Image 1 (cartoon, rainbow, N blue to C red):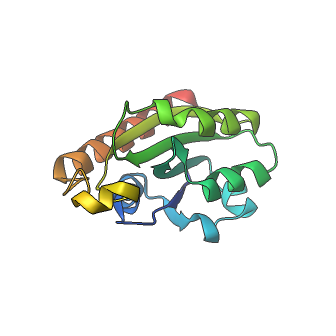
Image 2: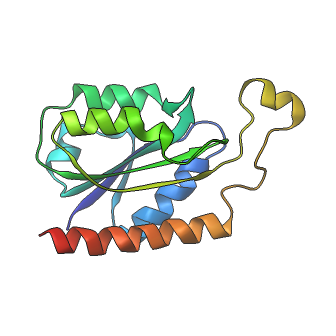
Length: 154
């Protein structure tokens, strides 16, 4: 299985920490969305898409990248870091886009991340120290499950 992870991590590196843990387990190529292209998608069997959550959805640059892709028949997973809220409600927009492009989504992961966006910066932010070691361990476990799921679908 060839895997790649396309991600956006802007403010505190929360999403990059999670992406790196998942990439280690999957032996995946790790690419910031600005370095990913159509070949990234074409040359991999499993592609992860992740970012922090901004105004209730993944970063606009990641969504635009997906919108610009051609239709494919590939498997994908989604991940995110967020300040708060229910874990997977924020994945709706990216799920819809990926399914429209022909992706089968085989897993989702989300955890809290340190957040100082907007008014939160005036109070020192929320979720200090997140993602923590426990979150990183959960990301590794998620990646192990992805490998098992991917193999069972072959």
